Image 1 (cartoon, one colour):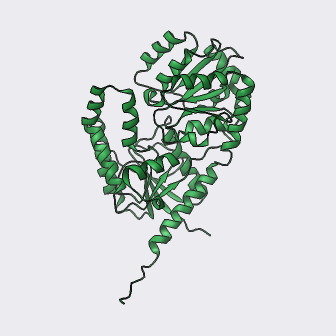
Image 2 (image 1 turned 90 degrees about the vertical axis):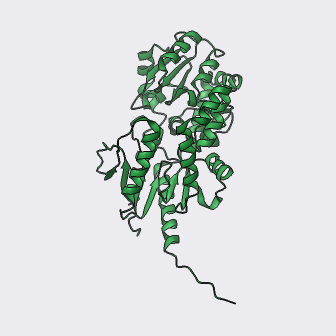
Length: 388
């Protein structure tokens, strides 16, 4: 029988709308099912599950001070505690395990620069927050304490090897799990008509769905441009938040009046998966979007980009399509193919089959196996070398 492992999970912000936060919630449930004892280290904890928390919430002004202050507080609070392992979901060097759910910041800036002019690229290069994050990232990956990195995609694993030279033996690819009982094709029967009626979308119109916050990074500009080349009966539903929401709404109205619908952030995306025919996420950079897993589990084909970890699950033309984030023509071509309902349904069934093995239990089991391997290695006595 497994001995309980006491794990600290570090995540600075916890909201109902974030994909990384949903992963933490799912991971906690899966780990508890496997018998692990968990403590969350965060700025604020309103969870009602009974999970204990260490709250680190020092005063700050601005994102730079926020991240620096949280990192200092965490390292001071975690050290005296009797944790078997400390797992961080933030770029903080005082951890045994880092889950690279946010990917590689250096790679994100490289991808973002593809859409920026020279002055904006220079502004990013001298921005204190980005400079701090890059330094924190390097300190983390070169920390002698770091035992393992959990990568949520092979893409992230390869980027860490490329930029920081970590050996592959330290990098463990463990895909996120999805609750295939909560996200399933039956959502179509429960929610399709109601959601469409609420937003004035005809029952038989092809409906594409986007779910995500931070529209620039997640590819909404490319998606809106692609809508210009999509047949006039097709609609697009955009679920999520963005600081420039009003500007995106105006652009959507100009491009495809009456066919682009913004819902704002939603605590439960399931009804929207049920209403849609296909899911589209032409992201500039996303280590592994949980929304893509949810959409596939709900029986939707997925169109995403090469710089999305979810592309590793896509078999082009079988359960979705993959294109460059800035290739608007290829994006539009893929979406047009999915306007045929029979094609979308067939590819959606294949998408569901693809993710069925990626259960929360499977994820929890892989995480526990990794923890036990690390603890066993730390207990293994060193064998002295004898002089010749």
